[in-house]
Image (cartoon, rainbow, N blue to C red; front, side):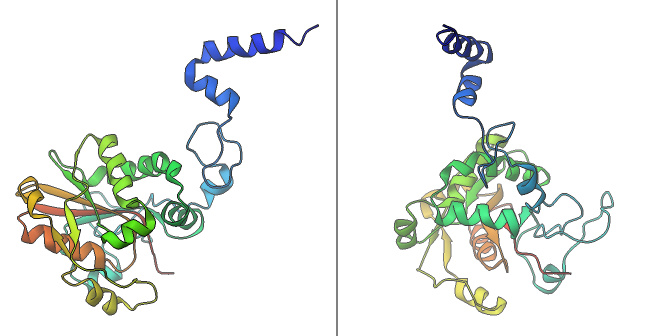
Length: 257
């Protein structure tokens, strides 16, 4: 006799909590990494959060790699890579280290068609981007060659940069850059080979050059390893008249120690 009241009670709870709460009652939020129950949509469970490698403390001011020690206000620190290699950008950040949960999420987005991850990843990117945003900043993704775009069906960096631009209320230009040639994969290459592989491979689309001229540009990519891809894009942007270039990656490959 009490069974008809149960749906009615559920409907009343949905009405009190609104449409978002109603969806959560029917489809409870799950961890974006492991599907464990979580309190809020697009979140991580405690175990995955602890293994995510979020970069919160002292970090390299050029690439975002985590550094030992405590941050000192007004002082920029640089990692060994950025001390050895000249960077054509002025500042950079990363949201997490490319290992554990961070690596899992990047691979799921890039190769697993997990486009549902974009809202959560963009939120973490926005937090990391806070020191990089200037009034009038233009945000653009690292480009894919059209052949790779067809294979992947989407440019994941463009999805991230678009969601980030909306989150921080900045102008977005998803097709600012073009790949001039289909470069071989960077996997397994040395640092020097990575830079040689990308040299001259990226240019600013002529039809978009006017949007870039004299503006602060933030280039977004999913992973930074050597920085060769960012360097190719930054050099192209500066040659086309960008006022300054900053870079932001979802994950940074960091060396042990």
